[in-house]
Image (cartoon, rainbow, N blue to C red):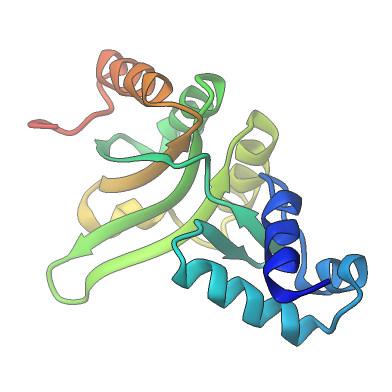
Amino acid sequence: MNGEDRRKEILRSLGREPCTATALARQLGVSRQVIVQDVAILRAEGARILSTNRGYVAAGAGHARVFKVHHSDAEVREELYLVADAGGRVEDVFVWHKVYGKIVAPMHIASRRAADEFMQKLESGVSVPLKNVTGGYHYHTVSADSEAVLDRIEVELRARGFLAEGE
């Protein structure tokens, strides 16, 4: 299999569930380093591939939008459920800090189960939501299969009062 065919197979293999470079290497009969290089080439060509601590994932189906939101700590789970239930995926969270600039953290939450796992980590007391460093204001990059899904998410965020003023 040549490099071009291998990269096409990598793209076909990636979905919303993480896949490690080692697993892809085994599947395609090459080294892990070859997969890492192929992913770099694919990204340079515009493929939306995200790295997580559990492997690579496809970053939605090409439709993404950034939402500026504001809510309490008690409403974090509700916000994540709202996006997942509407068919979206919370790719990341970021804040604009007046000293540090943009601080971003990957999330990759597309289901209630993933939201619950995230919330368990927060509720363990090991840390607090990133939004707390900016008084609750934060941004999420949300991906979905269509602009219509993103429109629905925006409507629901607004109806719930989560969209920040002027957004």
